[in-house]
Length: 104
Figure 1 (cartoon, rainbow, N blue to C red):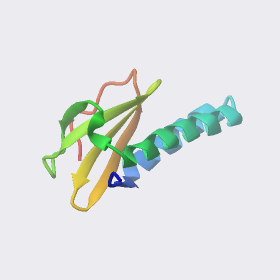
Figure 2: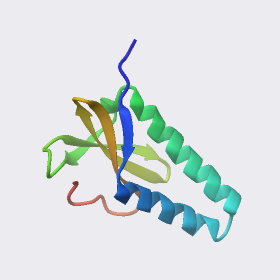
Figure 3: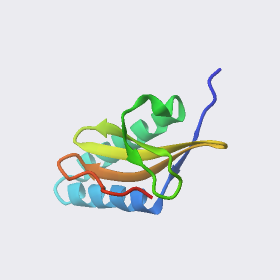
């Protein structure tokens, strides 16, 4: 059986998700819940084989690769630690926005 990674949402990622849901909630509370659920389900899928998605940069503090997962129209940026196995969700951004220049 494949080892699973613990999923950890950083404060920045939680703030991003809250901002996305709040913005959508203005027009459609139901759609806001659906979008947040889709994003969280995709994040949960990173517990298995988290390195399967594209590398897009490096973490400044750790020097570890940062990957991106697309959940249209959003992009989830995360880094993977192997000891102990964990996935740190760094940012959740609209895909039309520029990629962050630096990752924590």
